Length: 116
Image (cartoon, rainbow, N blue to C red; front, side):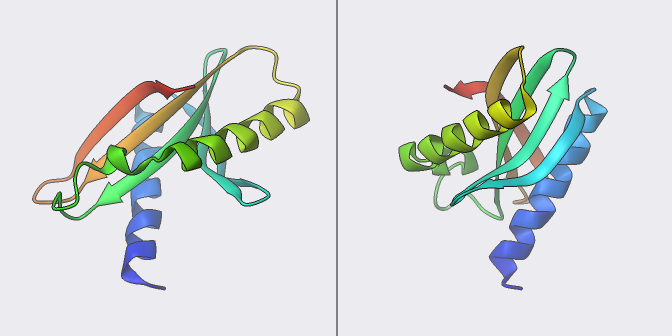
């Protein structure tokens, strides 16, 4: 597997661990619908959270969270709608971004309600 794919998978692992430590229940990892993929679907109390994870080894191309494009957001929304419909979710939802930088020490930035 390519190094950037390994880093991405490792970042998703770190993000899931981080969420669990904050009291989130991980419902699904790498949920796919068509060409869209949601890295993590989690639940905290009566809130369903769709999480996009971005991991970078250095910040020469900017902060990891800036890599979530409008096109990516559109795909995430479609996959989330499918998840909500197929699970008959009736409560609130939120879209978060977890940005992980591993330049030096590992740093986690959790942007709650990052987009809609």
